[in-house]
Length: 335
Image (cartoon, rainbow, N blue to C red; front, side, top):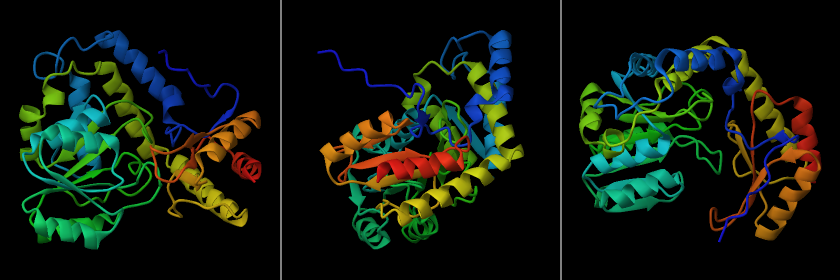
């Protein structure tokens, strides 16, 4: 049976994009991509360990290692590839937050290792599981993709040191939004969010990155992304660091959304200052009806319903390209 193609943003104001800083639309980034295609062609031609590794890829990895204050970095085709590859490469049991992304769960399943899921952001439960499953890997997202909540990374780091276990943090929705101060053995940065790009970086100590180059199967056995993608990602990273007004504006919009939603009596999944703002509905049918209503009002924002989440919701993603009036009018339309 053919799957129904759902409506696209069209002429609506898009509140379902992860392009938090609007970098994908930058003329500088688009020009870097175009010049990359002209210089290197469309495809990479091979896996990175054969002939698909180009100078722009090395430059991107070095730039991220420096930005994240890590020894080395490795460029994967996607965040999904990164999590599958690195989790599979470690032959150890896994302890993870219950709300971790599907790519982390699938990586744990495909690794063949036992895995345990602690209650969301519950460090006491995480410690209980770690005490029963030593040695193991501790994994969490930094900003959770459906809740918008922030993990206690410092607390997780302390637990990892206490139980002498590697800590992996997926910073898909935190990179570019929160400070680059994660204390973990490996940090995963999918580049399709605040950077507005494609692919993923895994950064950490040199010996672990070298290990992944040799044992992360999703890296070894995939054709590398085109070098033009690396060119565009590098331009976006430079722009992110230079044009700090983008983050300043986004932070003010997040604060406005929280205060306006609270005043309107809406229930937010999290009050944390992250771009993911989920309004809890707790009824699949009502959530889908509200999605349709909002689209008629000119807002493209998606309902996320069970079984994807336990509590149905309207999940709005805020970007620096939004205006204050967009936020206010969206909240009004939800009443």
